[in-house]
Length: 116
Image (cartoon, rainbow, N blue to C red; front, side, top):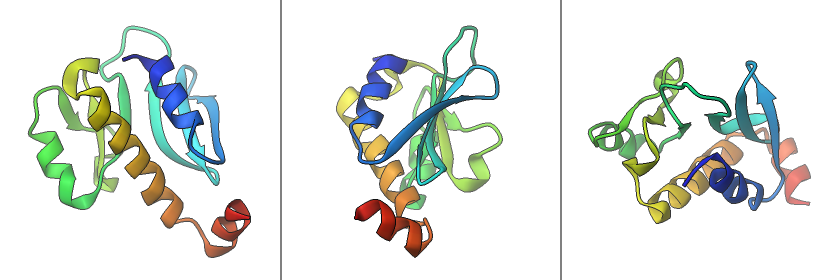
């Protein structure tokens, strides 16, 4: 897995947009709200950050290679320190879950517009 793999997973989700922010981070958004981000250039402390479900946040942070995301832990974001921290299937599920949580918190008008 790498940032290109994450990019394919994220762009397969409806209405996802991507942009480079903060100089070198690739950020994935739904309705203008971020649900995953990862650096495009080395060196980096974390290879990917995303929102975790409240019931999984602490459990994920106890796993080797996963930490509370810098600056975003208060919003229950986690960060992978390396690509081997999670199996591909688990990471794909967690990215989709992050997308769904962020989508669910969008204003109703925005959700309705995106849902068509």
